[in-house]
Image 1 (tube, rainbow, N blue to C red):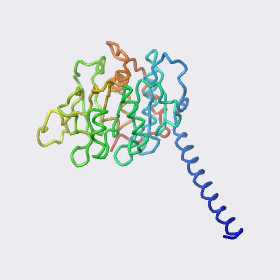
Image 2 (cartoon, helix red, strand yellow):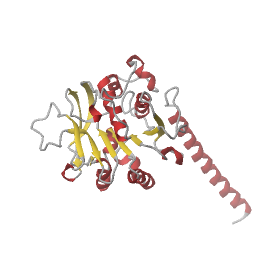
Image 3 (cartoon, rainbow, N blue to C red):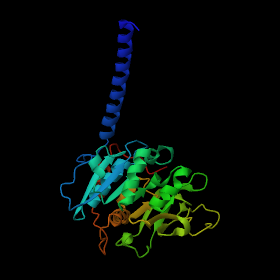
Image 4 (cartoon, rainbow, N blue to C red):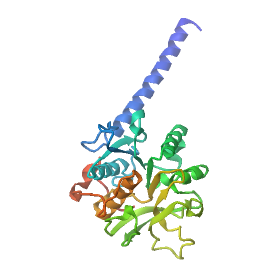
Length: 306
């Protein structure tokens, strides 16, 4: 290859590299621009005595007011900050700093599932397994319980259940929760009514061992009774055999649901419980000016239609 040819190859390579770098930078900038005012990414916990809780939010965009992973995690961070000794940390898609997950008492996953799931990446599964082995609390919201069938057994070991394509179901309906079991996650939770996208008829750990169902709901359009007691379960806690706690709520489709105090307290209690924090008899404090709920969003939400 002569000098001119080598020069052309080098220029093509550099051009491609710069294009890729620019695309990644633009993508990162676009994702960061979706952060609500006053929120920063992967902030270092200033006090080791505090309970660090990492919230991993998907940066992708669906529809205004729906699948608002960043906005939802931002609300939950403000709820968690109201409990003394708790320090919430926000990451987009997956932590970029090695120290972000270090020392975490709990990790919240709120992003797309299925063929877009972060756990399809082998290195991320390995990092999650380290968290599990260390007894770190795990929380899955909405689609995070949806994984390919071959990943189901591992996720059931981590979370107590998984959504299995071809067997499990998903649908939207309005559910009202009026009564709650005697469990720390349910302390102080007022009845709430929400329009949500539910994942149900899940594959649970064998014999439901370690699983405590907390919320059940059945579609008002259902033509027959559920096949089993576990079919309508849409939220549960799981005490893992090797130690550690997990909490799942398959709702969280609409950002507007955070206007319900009972809903906010239920999710916040669940996160604190997985982190090993004592949930007060009246539940975690979850004060919020619901008129300002949209400030957590990067765009005005659409109607609550599907």
